[in-house]
Length: 149
Image 1 (cartoon, rainbow, N blue to C red):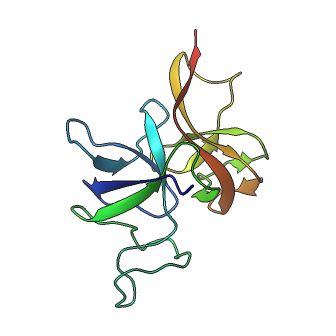
Image 2 (cartoon, rainbow, N blue to C red):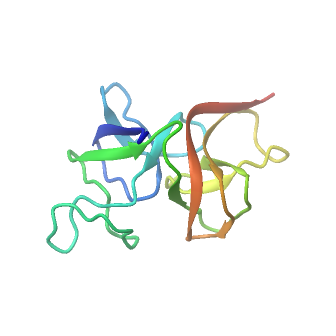
């Protein structure tokens, strides 16, 4: 079953990034802004507009948004298909690591030992490892959290 969510972007959302709800807006979506906000899923690998096409179905280079503000977008949610997410700057992800968002919606591994106190929202589990800036395969989660005392 393809468990994708249809939302409206309330800001630019790049492909393969974690996505959060737009506060106070029904079915609104924003690119995730860090590990402390609930993640609703992962933006698809495609973009709404590239090289004159209405919908680009292949993986796209960074720099092309998946959706601009006001455009519809598809997000892979809980129990959705295996998908891709971009690894955050300066980090390495290992297989089976739980992933949270950095300030740009990129994936970073949840390091429980060094995490600050409070709730961290888990957006996916890494299926494979990868280095900063690379897309990696992952299994999306939504609304899963870890609370560090």
